[in-house]
Image (cartoon, rainbow, N blue to C red; front, side, top):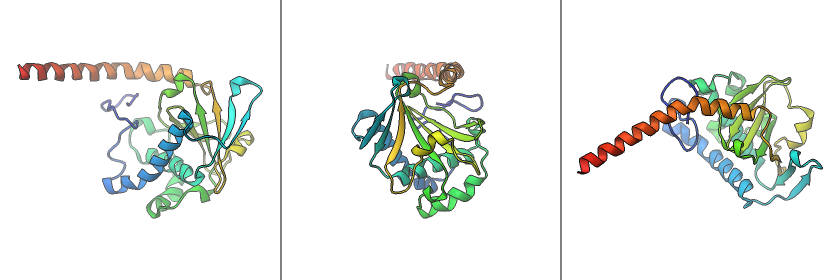
Length: 228
């Protein structure tokens, strides 16, 4: 559901809905990598995709590093295609995505069905098991030297390096690389700023949720009257 001002709040099982990004034919180009990411996320959280290697931190708060035998190139493409969608969107929730370089890196590969992993763009996946991490959010541009984009999905965050830079050294072992296992950071606690984000998102969404529930109640009441 949208959680910002501007336009009507629209419930959608996949998050923000913007029918103006692509036509139905072009939207289908995203479907395969979307499904790969959905199955990977579900498999990691439920344990149906077992890790091939685990390294636990001495500090339980830092969680663990786990590697999975899945196709890194498709998850890399999912990350880049999702950021591309946000770049094309005119919705206010996506206004932080100002990445003209993504047009050149993604558009033709999307049309041709090729992976974006050969671009060398740093992409890292982080899982967060804390209940607050169940919320999805709009793409965020993190100005933190180096700059990067953060895709906020329920219990799964994806970091994408901005133009001409690499993610910090500590993240380098987690980079998605062609032909290599997918290595993720699985941590129990929210990332820095997530608690503040959750409070703000709930506060913005509350009036919109109230309006949607009220409209549903009115429709239900109308249907009862008509049936009588």
